[in-house]
Image (cartoon, rainbow, N blue to C red; front, side):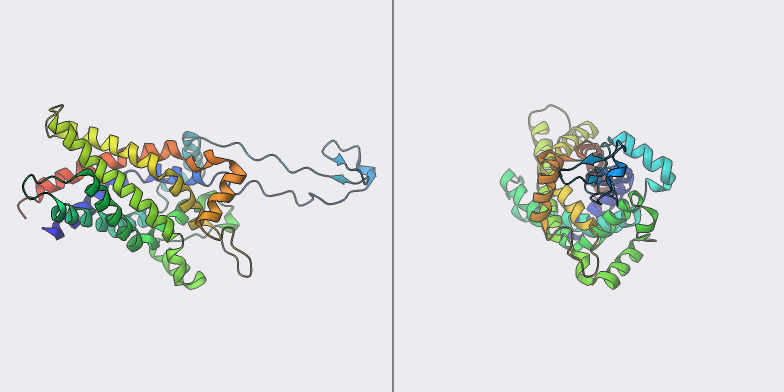
Length: 326
């Protein structure tokens, strides 16, 4: 019975992950907006002779020297603009950049968390009523999500990098051929520990997402059925999963932004990394871009989390029906 929960959860997660991958890609690109502003003008801060004072792009200083001001940062693009730009510059295939990593991530991460959640539900449910209190549902989600994230972190890092690659100049792209190529290159060039870069964030996010998503879905579904608002069917599953997707999006977005930036940072040999850790990344992000930056990509997050959660649970319910006799 326990193994079946892993199989059911894995199948549903892979289908949901692949079908909503373009939305996840847009979310990642939006979360990285503002992190790498336009490259500074190489002439900035170079002292110029007063002969060039006629140039309107220069500013006089008390010392009689001139400086060229930095160009303004590019305007932030919305999800539709980001999606269109990906389509125009990278084609349809660009919208599925890193999909092989998504499949591996769902196979490792979601299969583990979904299966463990079902195991905990069976063990902790009231033997008489068969129900599980909300507090225990949340606890089951926290534990299952944390373990699943630790297992799937290498695929998560690869997925973020593959999704982010298209936004970089051609000379700076990593050009991973597949998730296997990404993981092997990271291990060779940056060490095996790089595969677990940002793992604390991944674990924290997964605990929040799993607890809010799975626990709230079960709770919403039970409430709908108990109050007789709808019968147990597609309508109930869609309603409960949309509500669960909203809860999970609000709870997880700040951690997701920091996770994306830490995983995607480029560490050059002999140079200090852009971020020393999750807290450093959070502080630098808030200082440079304001607290609202922690909710960057929220629209595509909820646009992806909603459909993902719906596809996940609707597929899960159907897979359970198909495998009920096994």
